[in-house]
Image 1: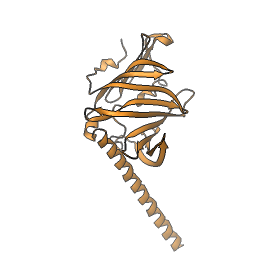
Image 2: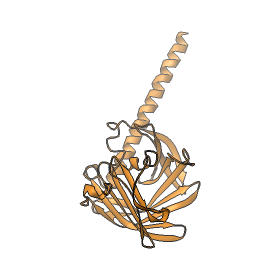
Image 3: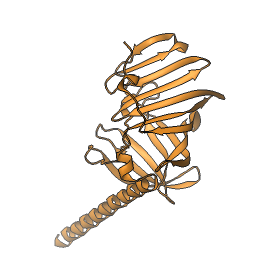
Amino acid sequence: MKRLSYLVIILALTCTGISTAQAQKVDDILTSYFEITGGLSNWKNLKSMKMTGKMLQGGLEFPATMSQKYPNKFRMDIDIQGKKIIQAYDGKEGWMINPLAQITEPKVLTAEEVKEMEDNQMEDEFIDYKSKGHAVALDGEENIEGTDCFKVKLTKKSGDIEYHFFDKDNNVPIMVRTFAKTGPTEGQPVETFMSDYDAVGDFMLPFSMTTKFQGQTVMQIVVDSYDLNATLDDSVFALPK
C-alpha cells in the first residue's frame, strides 16, 4: 500500500510538471506571437482600426469596410451593386440595414442575432487573458493545409471555446476555429484563415482572411489598407435615430 501511495505521489508530481511545462510553452508561444507581429505594448495601445478592402463571395466582389473601436464596438459596411448593407454593434445594441432583405431602415437585432457580434473585441483575447477570466492551454499540434502548427485552446470566461493555430516556424497565427452560436449550424466549427501578412506601421497584419465551413470557402476578405488608431466617433456604431 505504501508503495502504491508513493507511485501515486510520483505520478501526480509528474503530471503537475507536465502541466506547468505546457503552461510555460503556451505563454512562450503567445509572447513570441506578440513580439513578431508588433510588440505587446503596441498591441495594448491599439484602440481602433478601420480596414478597407473587398469581400469575395460566390465569384463576386464587393467593396467593404470594417471598423472597430475599443472595447467591443464593431461595424461592417458592404456595397452590393450600389446597395449598402450595414451590420453594427455599439457595445450594447446591435443593428443592421439590408436592402436586399427589404430592411431599408435600421433594424435592432435580437439578443440571439447579436450573439456573434458581441465577440468582436477590439483587444486581442490573449492580452492579459488571465485577468479577463480566460484560460489558455496547448492542445498539441495540427497540420493546417500543409503548415505544422501549435494548437492553442482558448476557453473564454463565458465558456465559449476557440482553437488558435500558430505556425511552428514563427508563431504567427494562420487559422482560428470557432463554433457557430446560432441558427441551424449552431455548434459546428467555422474556420478563418489569415494570410498575406505585411507590415503596417509597427505591426505585421494579414491582408487576406478566408472563412470556411465544412471545408468550403464561404467568404474571403481582401484588405487594401488599414487605418490604425483611426478617429472613429461613437456615433459611427450607434443606432441612427
